[in-house]
Image (cartoon, rainbow, N blue to C red):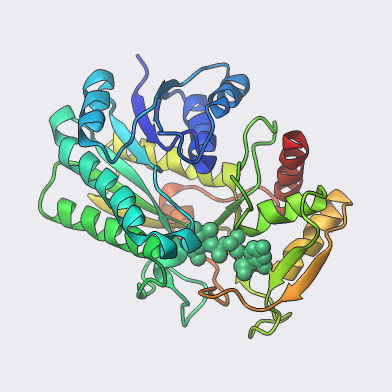
Length: 337
Ligand code: UFG
């Protein structure tokens, strides 16, 4: 019998790509998702890629009763916890919703995992915990900075909750993955990012503009202290990112991991907004009309990862090229159209 893994938020962007990679690696996946920010058709896309339909449980992970029921029913060995609200701007408008949603669900799992013999939890964190670092690239030892949004704060608080639970001797392990900027889609174009409403993130806005759905991409600022004045990020292919979750889960299942481990998941390379636009145009041959506007409040000027810890210890590395990644985003956009 294959080892069962619960993927919360498995119908979402990173969750669906991770489900594909877990199934390809031989795991049996149970998805728990309340579909608040995703669509049920994603499960069909996963099935078309892998030939396997993951079990789907429509539950709200912030409901303790439902969490217990799912763990009782499926007896999973590991949990990958993606389910969370993730829009920075919305979190400023609705902070209590973010604290309730992102913290309650984690507490529910940490409390009941020992009852059902779950060996460990892989947690979706973010490079947002580093704020604007003084020294680049950032390592896992770089200082954690005060969060600039309720969303960012929930990631910091969740990391602390996991650390404290494990420090107190809870009988499970955790691997905390700090994502840089995941972009792109599965090369099959069967799954990808499904922004609901106006996209807040750069690449979905860019591909919608290229497709003519939006008039112009607004570049938020060209007066930063960077070579071309626009902000710099570490854009990582979503399939590469997803593969790191499989390696992390293998470590937990095979009892190779320390009680708690942290990894930066990035490419190690920073790209500016203007560079990304130009790379997209070269990779796809499609023009992206854009205009420079003022800075977006709360934006970090520049950040990119030192991924060497993940490279060494996990034996994982981001391998997809930025051109292929941008082409995958474009294929997905064309399919959505
Ligand atoms: N940008 C634009 N125009 C847009 C959208 C974005 O110029 O229409 C710029 C932003 O100013 C930024 C870059 O593109 O410089 C990337 O912006 P995203 O919104 O795509 O990503 P962020 O780096 O702001 O946010 C991401 C995640 C968050 C996470 C954060 C941590 O979306 O969940 O990284 O820094 F908290």
